[in-house]
Length: 244
Ligand SMILES: [Zn+2]
Image (cartoon, rainbow, N blue to C red; front, side):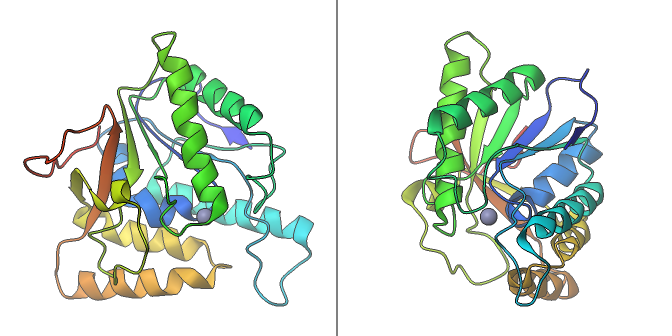
């Protein structure tokens, strides 16, 4: 699936493994970038066909369910383009050809030239092998593009250390060491709606509840990111508030 303004380059791009990674990870930053007039894009490696609830439809058609959910989430966020790679199985990225995955990501990036890219860090937030592999492949793809002077200006990894919910993940050092804290309060309702669009996924409930209670309490809501390329020297003096 691919549709969108192919003639436009630049902007903010997110690259993840599954439908819903974008809504958990960076829906707020993407929505803010969209509202600021930036091109926003998402590349997802799989349809997420393995994340099937009990008693759900057969595996083949479930991928289509998740693709439709992703399209709804993308419309809520304000994404200009969503691409799902062909040929990769949910849960199977570690068994796929890493070189091919890097090729596919590099090709997508080379034709769109985003200014900044968001992906997973080295623990993939949850430790899911697909998350770890996609984050690594993105960084290889960016280095390949850098050799021909076409790397994005910045690569960020999701650092969910400011979420309203409990910090329930065993994060890697780079995912704990956020360099950027982006306030997404103005678009928090859209982040909730994007998570809700992934209706087949019951594990969104905790995040939705945490966001809702923060919104109702009038609390500021943040997303955290670590800029990994170019690296930010430690200790960074203060959080930056923009990622593009
Ligand atoms: Zn995922």
